[in-house]
Length: 409
Image 1: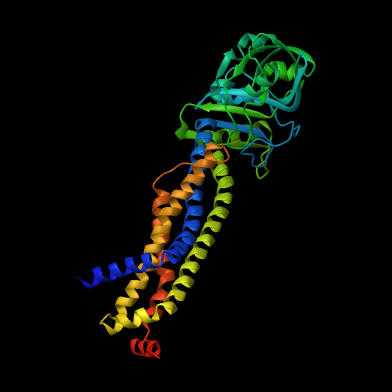
Image 2 (image 1 turned 90 degrees about the horizontal axis):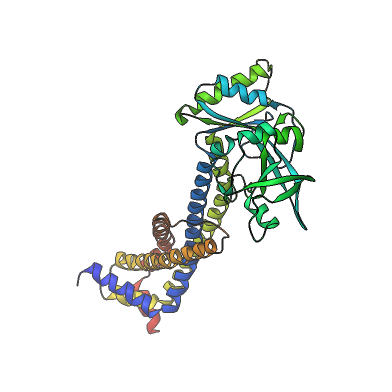
């Protein structure tokens, strides 16, 4: 039997002979690996969901918001800015190359919608017919705003799915009359369910009316919150965004060196902001996983140091029978490595199971790839070797003659 095979046999025999100790070390590291695996799976799921939401925002869409500060996502309160007007939207549509569709957008929070004895308070939007194509929305029932609705300033309303369910729990909202801010509106359509966007805005909890109706009736003001723009070639997005900025600076008579009174949002802004928001939590979770891994490594080191003291006679006897100090060193190092890898396998299965369970409960998102397996195995090899070195050195330094003499006494 070769020396390496003999060492491997001794490693396996030692671990099986001290099963409680082996299981303790394995579980200590499995906990850290489980946290690490769960963090990776949840982070990958979150990133995939965010990228889907970013794509849903429209990779060929620009948005102009009133106000000069950076506004990637919608503000959390109405601000009443009097900066953007419909004329800005028409100028962009007429003068900027690469622009195919434009819609002026107004919105206001805390709008009451009532049907019979049921009522909701939601956010109302006034938009133009092209808005639905620009924002890639679809109707589950009925129709969207038409040019004739715009021309007549019609009191028609499109409901988000949450609003429709609250007012019409049995369905059939289309063609019924509801009261929006105490005025009668005919329900023309119900949107397809969209969920929450990358900025945390619930697309299903809102209503939409024609822009002319919002600007001259519902809100009775000319100012816009947004202008949404569809481009023909997404590769020219930066150049198109810069031309929009230049045009609006001229229209708003902003002098050189002065800050814009609007913000032009590009698709990359949405992606960066959404990923930044999720990376903070991922970083914190990763730090917790690393601490748990280090704690598992410390448990392995301390248990094995204790094992060296308990196995001094065994070590001395093996040395007396011809085992080298390097053989003893390798045996203890391999014991640490084997326990770490076993703990890693248990931990990665446990971590993925926890992440999938949380995803099934709709608490988090998860996405399983090869990354958690590789990360678990690499981290376990590093932990096993790093924290097994000290016990292995201590075992290799045991003097066989002294140990056997003490045992005889």
